[in-house]
Amino acid sequence: MMKMRCWGAALLVPIVVACGTDEVEEEESLQTWTVISGDMRLTAEATGNVEPIRAVEVTSKASGEVTRLYVDVGNEVEPGALLAEVDPRDVRNAFDQSQADLQVAQARAEISQAQLTRSEELLESGVISDQEHESRALDFANSRASVVRAETNFELAQLRLDDVIIRAPLAGTILEKNVEEGQVIQSASQNVSGGTTLVIMADLKFMQVRTLVDETDMGDIRAGMPATVTVEAYPQERFMGIVEKIEPQALVQQNVTMFPVIVQLDNDSGLLRPGMNAEVEIELAQESGVLLVPNNAVVTPEDVQPASVVLGLDTATIDTSNLFAGLGDGRGRPTADQTSAREGGRSGGRQGGATRGTGGGRGGAAFDSMRALMASGISQDSALVLLPEIANLFSGRRGGGGGGRGGFSGQGAVEQVGQAEPGEGTSGQQRETSRAVVFVVAADGTTIEPRGVIIGLNDFDFTEVVSGLEEGDLLAIIGAADLRASRDEARNRGRPDFGGGRGGFR
Image (cartoon, rainbow, N blue to C red):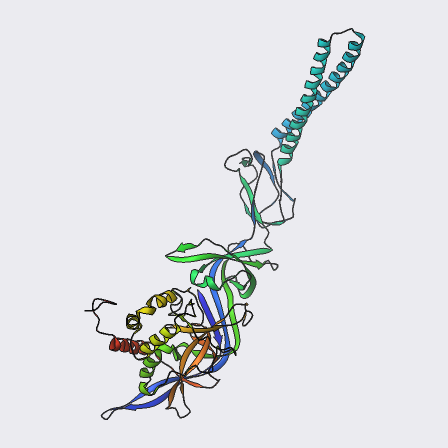
């Protein structure tokens, strides 16, 4: 879930605007907003569980009865610390037997060596035949092989004797104890099921939170981003972490596509425990000292006419051709002649936010023609019918990637005019800017005029204005429902008399 925060204060000031006809004079209350300076912080929030980075199941290579258990849940141990002992009688007997077999094999090898030496002397004297000498040599070779076999069995028996003493493979804390003294366990090396787990242990100095993040937020999250974690046990504590990785395989929960995100934490304080419920806040962007306006004071360039109707302005006197003259992208760079259209928004998170467009340099003249038609009250669908040469291009631009920044709630598409260089703002993310329009209330409280602005970050409530306004400017608030009704009315009024659906003539 995406969450944005901004700080600042302002008041919605009602202004009485006199509107009337020859017969009836009404008074309507116009809500306004004074542009303020504040801070805006964009975060992605999710929940998850605290877990150790590496948890180890300790099993025994030896089978038998657990005679001693030296640890309990919660004990901290060092590498090689004694954890448990298994009844050693069977393996000790096998060890003693293998040791005896080795001694016998070594004795036989010594006797065979002496016999072979005498046989060589007798062969030189001609006392024995070659066949008898060869038999002595074969006996000596067999005795040497018996020694090797006995040494191997002895080493295996010694390893099995060592296996009855279970030691800690690493430094950590005992999380679970699954056996008690007197319990018979199965060998992990001789059992297909993996044997009996004695204890589960982990190093709790470094922890992680595995959380699921909505796919609409994935385009803004990168490994290495700072994150803040809070747990219910310590609501006042904020644990700092870093996004370790984003797992590639998505998970679908209740028809919502999520991606596992791993946030690594430093737990030197020892407060975090495995299994704690955690709330993760990943910082995506942060701006300080920026101009803030409410979302319902901002409209797209295409909605200037419907918004003017809502405010009771004379649309015939409004000139939208030079609204953005001299604005650039808000950072001293010229605006590109061909701007990419952006539509859509964050599904399930915010209403109608902008999405990244593609192909920003194609069909500029055709788009200007379409904007002119839409400004005259013709709907976008009808404009596409009248201008079929750009229908495919426009539909292609609609397919841009989701999750863009700079959109605002309920206001449709905006034009992308620039991106910040890496390093502007926080997190080193490229920051988009977009064109939009606000309605400025003059000092007399009655004159209202549209003004083009460049907007940046956006949350559920506020939009950052990069250029085009100054702190203290008074803006008119436009109700989303009224704007939608005015837009629909203009669309219905300008729709050509076509039948049979979109693109078909009666």
